[in-house]
Image 1 (tube, rainbow, N blue to C red):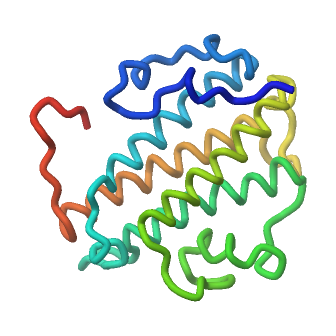
Image 2: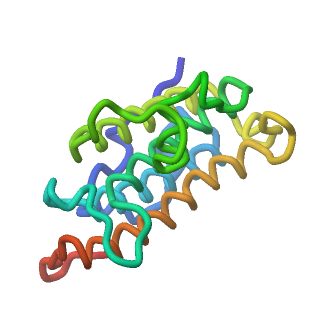
Length: 194
């Protein structure tokens, strides 16, 4: 069985590898899946960079003019990925009854089962990592024919679904960067890429 090899991918934006899309380096993935993995990896690295050194007190703050906190957005990003696990890998819809915790994150706390307490930044990072590990584990068992195939319900294909996971994260990362400027401004060290 093919498996994702983290050594073949960037683990930091300080790595030159983060700025190269080279899907052929990892034999676990077919070409289009490999390119998608490269883009998902870069996107996640930039999301994590946006919350580097974020004070815990700022995690769940909602700034004037914003309806969500950085914590809510991180929980949502993880829940979107978990939602597409259900749609894409299990072939069913997400429901509040069956997937309460995921639904809570997906709806940004409006529906579903809320956690007994709001998670810490480290717990949210761990959930993001766990969701991504599952994505990569399953992707290593699939190929480009699967990627071009239909998503549950036939309204989109698998490739679009996973592109949507990525573009949704990019959108919310932008919101987090704006929120951060209000709740916990961060200075970029000289020479740091943003």
